[in-house]
Each structure stands twice: as C-alpha cells, then as structure tokens.
Image 1 (tube, one colour):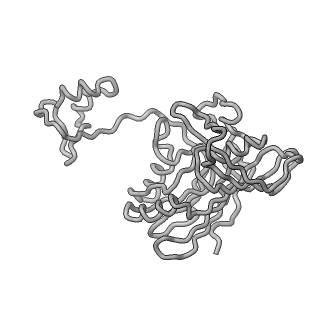
Image 2 (cartoon, rainbow, N blue to C red):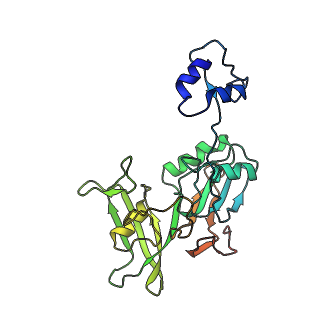
Length: 284
C-alpha cells in the first residue's frame, strides 16, 4: 500500500510523513501501514494540509433555526461550501462547528461574492424534500441590487435570453437567437443620487443570471468584479463587496405545509467590513 500511495500521491502530499503519522486510514478508521499488502477496490482516506486562509469579515446572522432547517444571512466573500482556496472560510465548515450540526448542508446556491439569505438542512434526512422544492421552482426569491440610475429606462422590465457558462471562463455569455433559458423581473425601487436600488425577481436560476441581466440593461451592479470587466482582485481583498443582496425568500414547507417567509437583516449599500443591519428577521 505504501508503494501504491507513493506512486499516486507523492506529487501532492508527503506520503512517507503521512504514513509515519498514521494520517492515511481505511474506511474502518484503522490506520494504513506502508507495509500492508496492496488490496484493490479499497478506499484510503486522508486530510490534506490546508493553506492559510484569510478570515472573511462580517457576521453570519442566524435568521431562523428549527429541527429541519437553518436560515442564515451570509456576508459577502464567504463561500457557501468548501472548495478551491476557500475551505475553512465557508458557511458549511464554520457553521457545522458553531452550531454543532455535523450534517449541515446548503439547499441552494449563493455565490461567494453575493450576500444574503441561504437555507441549509440540519440533517441529511431532510435534504431531499427541500432540495426538490428548489429544483421544481417552488421557492420565490427576491434580490436587491445597487446600480447606476438610468432615467431613460422604463420599469418594471422582464429580461429573457439564453445564458451559457463555459468551463474555464469567468464570465457567462448571451447566446443570440437561442431559446430563452433565463428570465428576471427587474423593478426600480429607490433612486439614490446617481444610483438606484433595484428589486430583482429571478424566475429561473442560471449562473450569474441577475448580474448578466442588469449588465444587459446597461446598469451593471456596483462592485461587480466580473461584469462588465474581469478585475484582478486578490482573494483576501474584502474592500468592495458586490452590491447584490438575496433579501427575501418565501415558500410552502414541503413537510408541514406551512408558509415560510424570511427577510435579510442587511441593507444596501453593503460595506467592506460588514453590512448595515436592520433588526427585522422572520416575518409572521
């Protein structure tokens, strides 16, 4: 087993050191010894050493918690799940420890740079029913965005087009003349000098849909590091949050039939270290 691990993993980890420290284990939890006979179709588990991660500022506000779900208000720059360079600094890793919920898992996506409401299942047994609800489009989500004010535009406006994302590309793109697969309702809410707060209601859930639809109207969301131009922003630069907030969510609970309605405690504009916070939480 030692020779096999060396061949497969020496490029990534110190195999000899891991074996000596008993950091390779079988599914049973027993440590893997370098001299063990090679056994095919056997899983060997280990934890890599993680690179140092900058602490993401801003509070994770727990809006609601019960036996089945946890609703939180996420700050910008905090990844939802551990991936790439963001492992410890993710909602899942931080809250599993803080709430003592080892099976806590998100029920939908929220970009790392987007702030606001995120719903998680407390245990694996509840996940399927709630995830299916999201997949069927039965959850009404409302966002708010700060962007330039254009008096020449008429609102409300519904944007429909075909959005596509390609592996290895940061930006999504509009595919002209293809059938629409993305739809958003965009409404003007408040004018603030040269900027405005817009109410965004996505009717589909494509990658970067709201950011692309605002860009297409000529009013890109303030603080966007990808649209219209990809900016070279350091991973530990938290100075300029994207001014996009997942502000409201409403659905009928698939298990008890009750109306669930939650509202973010954050308000636009969002600030670099944290965000403006209002005392409002769950609606009755």
